[in-house]
Image 1: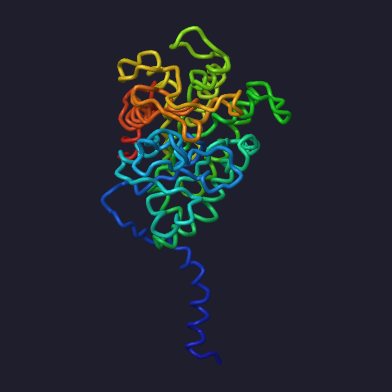
Image 2: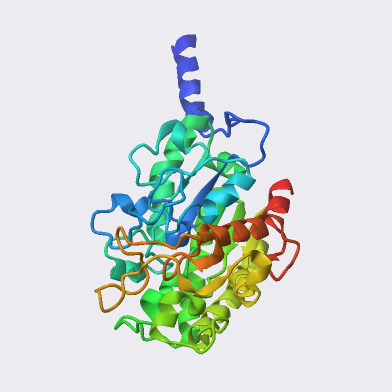
Length: 372
């Protein structure tokens, strides 16, 4: 006959698997804030320095004059000072978000979020080929799932589906899929423009669905930038006046942005309890270029730093290592051949957080997303 103690042990063994899956209350250090942190995915425009730790990566900004105005100097941010992630984080009372590849990004260091972004990467895995070894969107999401989430659950004492609804998910990707893929007409790209955009939208929708399935509920998705206005493009395809942009580049990007905005409407209907903010970076920067004096900007055409030209073995995109930078950096739109100055990043973050214009944010701004 079975003893009472043995019966108790058998019953406990049956229930332990269910107890281990309970959604216990998360142990956040700061209970006063609605948003506990940010998880960032995308390319160089939102990369805080992951590529520094990837030996074979060609897209790095860990040298001067990058970071000339940043408190820690060059960190891998592709600008002179703070990028849009730093500034958006300040709006939600967060410090600098650590990079996934940094070996110290573990334990308590991940509680305010992690930056998974990688300069030179795209929605499509093959886009990163040009930049050597980078982390594409799919790899970034795998890193969240396999490494960061288990660590976060351990730190907070709760399951990820309970924890991640307290974080902002920032997505800024897609530009390289055009500039380093479609426009280069690689052998693996035989798509028409509508077909290529459809491929990107399908890929991104699957990636957003995966982030939702992991527990993400609050998303901030950035449009593509108006790269046809950048010094890199202007150097290759000269245009007559400073306020003009190369439409053969901008029109496809604008078409993608239209499809992206429609995708987010669809995703909100498809994914219960999800909330999205679409930040129309394209339109915001175009407005800065059209009316620079309203933003205290003087130069909308040139890079602030010396870029490595095509004749010098570069691609007119990145600053020369140790090269000169302009002294009036807050008067320039572009720091290098493709990335904006901190002055423009300030405008982008302020608009994302506070704007009431649907031409800049849709369907609402980040502040209301958090409060809602």
